[in-house]
Length: 138
Image 1 (cartoon, rainbow, N blue to C red):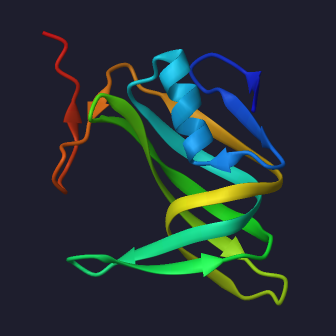
Image 2: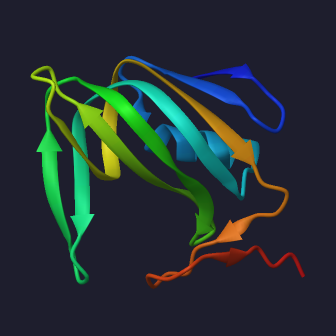
């Protein structure tokens, strides 16, 4: 993974074989990022685990083939003291069909580039499902 631009809106480039979003969480931990919005992302992923939440559990779809990332957005918050990337993605398959949902994991197939918006204050995601809150620094 490479940082192509820094500042408040860093552009990150993940390379073939990188795990995503795990690699983003690792980078956020190294950089001490406690809150960010994932503005957009483009590239290709394979070995993707997508999910759709049904109120009590996720239904999973495993997509092994390399797919174009049509849309990718989300946020980074703190969960259990570590950065947690909550990412949703829409993927385009080679037959021009599309699928999408919560992105649990994937492997960068060629490249994946994304833009973050660094937040002035961190976010905390509670252990139970629910809305995140500002990071309490007191």
